[in-house]
Image (tube, rainbow over all chains, first blue to last red; front, side):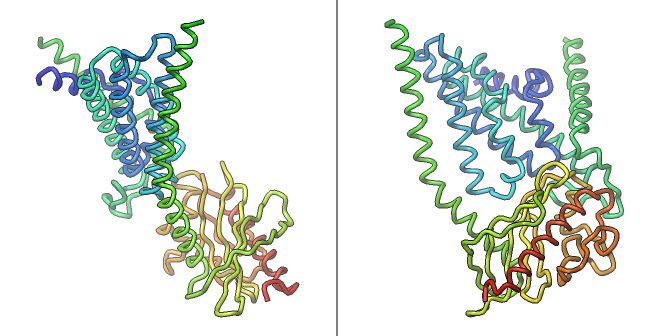
Amino acid sequence: MKKYLKIIWNGISPSNPVLILAIGLCSVIAVTNSVKNALLMSFAFSFVLIASEIIISALRKAIPNEIRVPIFVVVIATFTTIAALLARAYFSSIYEAIKLYILLVVVNCIIIGRAEAFAYKNPVIDSLFDGIGMSIGYSWVILAIAAVRELFGNGTIAGLQVFPSAYKPALVMILPPAGFLVIGVLVGWLETTLKKKEAKK
Amino acid sequence: MNKIMKLTLVLGLIGAISGGTLAGVYKFTAPVIKAQDAKELQAGLSEVFPGNYEFKKLEIKLKSPDPAIQIGDVYAVKSGKNVIGAILKVSSPGDQAPIVMLVGVKKDGRISGVKILQSLETPGLGANASNPHYYVNKEKKITFLDQFKNKKVTDPFVPKKDVIAITGATITSTAVSKGVKIAGEVAYSYFKKGGGS
């Protein structure tokens, strides 16, 4: 059990896909201008990542080494399409706003990276936990960025007014550049925390 | 040769399973998506033409006098058997991507309402065109789109003249105004020629 908790924790902090591995940043910046968008993206991302890791790990002995990447892409594309169809059917208003980024989950380097680096080499249960850990790691980061950007850029969090309406929103926060600003601050904070921890050891 | 056959077979098999799964999911979600689209369209139509009317899609193509602005679907608005107006889907070039909107036109040549369906304007500036809490007239709580209600299609529709522009978003304001004006004119001349009666 301890091993699995470690795999999950690995995704949340020490190997956080966004803050430490710094991959898949394009969609992170695009969907984090509001909490609602980030939430739907988290669901779509987690579903595709966890499902793809399980299937790829289960098939890992049957997948010939030479054509593993095309097979990863087919598996990931299948789950992305399923996620897109479900989102379109049940969350159509949010889906309209971020459909491009949901479809682009197909080429999200976090997913193909985890398929190659983890699921292809580890048993199904381990891959399931890696998927869960990476998903939590991705989700908490984009939700945190989205909350900060929406709060300062629009005075709201998930559409609820937080700052009084007299507050004049800082427009830059919901424009793409602020995505980099907020990610930069988070990376700095996580790196220093991890370094301090290391020094203590 | 043997190896290539094996690789092809494995990839083909996985592709087939994937295709089968997707066909199943599509079959399951297609009716929900279709119903959702129809519901959204109905809601959009009654929003730009308030009241208890029937909407009927017309199989006609109306030509726009401005090549940059395109006119798509046309719906007749009916009260019983009488046509009392029309709703046009127009697309007008916005800041980054076309602004697609529904424009309702009454038979007497006045705009009944405007709704933006798709746009990619700058958040906080041009995107305020479709923001229900952004008022161009704060005292009367009139949004940017509200101001077109009951406007005559023969008016000039020029921002900062007879249309209140969105602060910092002249391109968006002009694009929407132009689109509404053209939709209005096209529909009005269609009525005058006896269309829809």
